[in-house]
Length: 103
Image: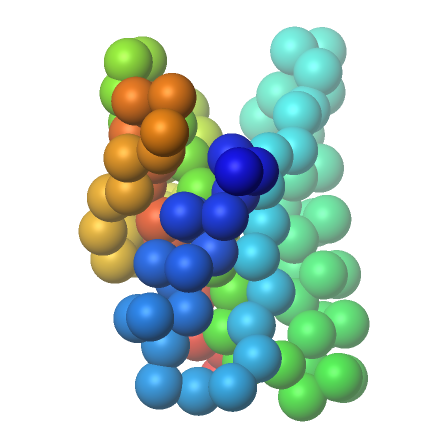
């Protein structure tokens, strides 16, 4: 079983549309933090999604054993996503699933 399997299954089960993009993790090095690099990258990604007629984006963020508060804030505050639930994997890590529907 792949780590992403339960996460993607959850996102599919909570979708009333066909097709979505599921993102895992990106890392911005400390020297580039707060440079808008991550936001700019995601905005370009959203533009590509719109061009391909894909309107939903879901990402996973670690909630337990360590809550990734920086990624949660980035998803909510910078990307306009909201939390649609949590999934526990076979390795007992808990992941929050964050969602955004593009206009």
